Image (cartoon, rainbow, N blue to C red; front, side, top):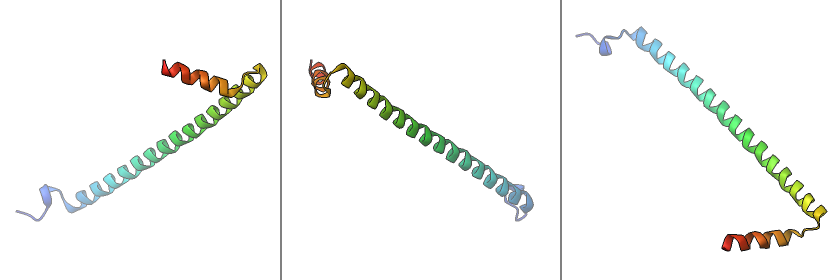
Amino acid sequence: MSDNQGGVPPQGTQELTVFVQNLLHQMQKRFQDMSDTIIKRIDEMGTRIDDLEKSIGELMQQAGIPEEQLKDDSNNNENK
């Protein structure tokens, strides 16, 4: 029997190792890019929610509805 593992020549093993390492680096980059995109979208959504809350507050002021009244009404509806 030879010293080669599984009949694969050392050069083939080395090439496979390099291939797998490159593949793992590519996957890591893709996952990092996806993670960055998701975080960016979550941040954008948070900003949009903040803007929406501000707009609702302004509409409530224009309508003359105190914010506390809506919170009380909301709590009463949840308890029913």
